Length: 208
Image (cartoon, rainbow, N blue to C red; front, side, top):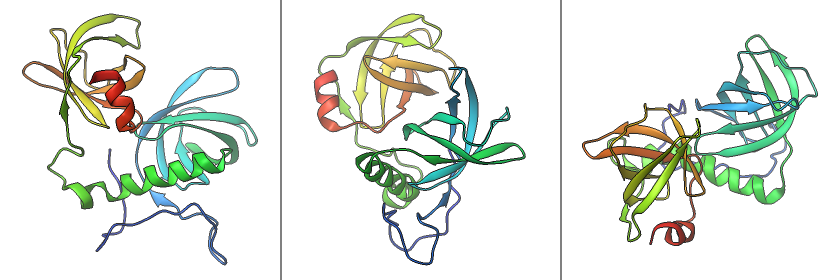
């Protein structure tokens, strides 16, 4: 993932409220890979161009129609529902249809994404990892294949798994009820990134 954003002297905060005389919500350039689902329930890959808590501009390999209902999923953000408000060559802009609570959560997620290098350092792991005390698990790949694994450690953004088969980087999977993707291979198995940032309490229920 890459983020194009003005260099910051202190962490930025994206707030979920309007500002008189400006675009209603602050928009940031951000590149995230994802997928979207149309009303036909067919899914297509896509790439995020920019986003605010009110909407997003998205590159798409297929043409969509203005007013069309779309559900889009991006790594680290999760699912967002809305309607197409503008189409352009190679993509579309959508307006989110979400609750105030979801908008506040999205603001927090975007703030974290914008500031993550500032807050943690580019060459460091993004979050503290903790050893799993109930390590025996299995993953289910998007293809439906189940693979036994041991959970070495976990954080709110990912996990390290000990396993023999090593699915290709980018493979989608489910660990328990947590959706994720293979991010890297290591000497004992794979490292995965969760699609959504997890609540610490949820991790304790799953792994500790």
